[in-house]
Image (tube, rainbow, N blue to C red; front, side):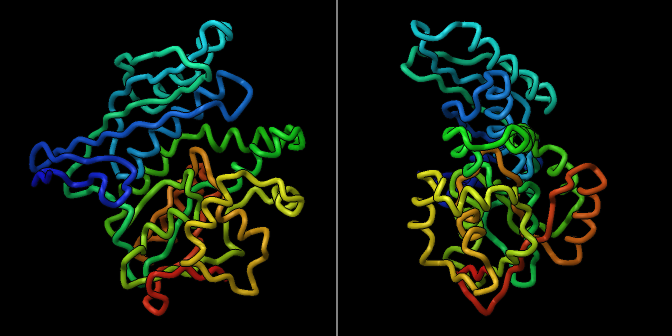
Length: 314
């Protein structure tokens, strides 16, 4: 079934659905929830909400309202844990200016939490995860490696300081980055980096297109402490799935260390925004982001015509 007002649906794995209501207003809808990835319930709530809101920011929109999605083992887990999760989530919604309207809960053997989010955007300003153009530069706004850190945490091998840095990154809203991006007039593609890893989401930008990507491994924002874990083989299962799915599109140059290649496939939670924009705006956007405290934002690559539908990591 097609509809002339549907701007983004399920066809291209965009971060959210977009439906045009009028010439200057469109509705954005998304849903996301998952099991705890950190031990502290309050922090889990914050990360889950930041992750769900990110889909709206990635489309270039403004999240307005949300509904809680809750699965909870009421007979085996103290209700105070759920209260802390919801409290952490509510704080993040308030930080993002999002109104909680209600939600739905079910009894489940394992706790899960997230949101259904509704946002708005001008139909003419919708950002899709495809459309990158030759000559564009790629910008990433958060460091990668949180999946590897979370795996090391489960193995009780991650130091507290590193875990805290990863948590701060995951709990940080992409709102500030999205607000700064709104001043750019030549953003050609945008997505947020989550479960498919940086390479997986970058691949979506050029799949079935006439352009390719060159990634600069020496410019990637990384949690550099993960190098030790990668070399020990402490890797999440999702990393192997991501590699198997996308490695046919990827070429590694000798200048890129193997451990960084692993990090590029690492599934992220509440990762940064990845955007392809005209090179004339990239440097000024990075400077603005750094000035506003988004210190890890970096230009990590470029869109090229010579390597159609492939990613070169050099």
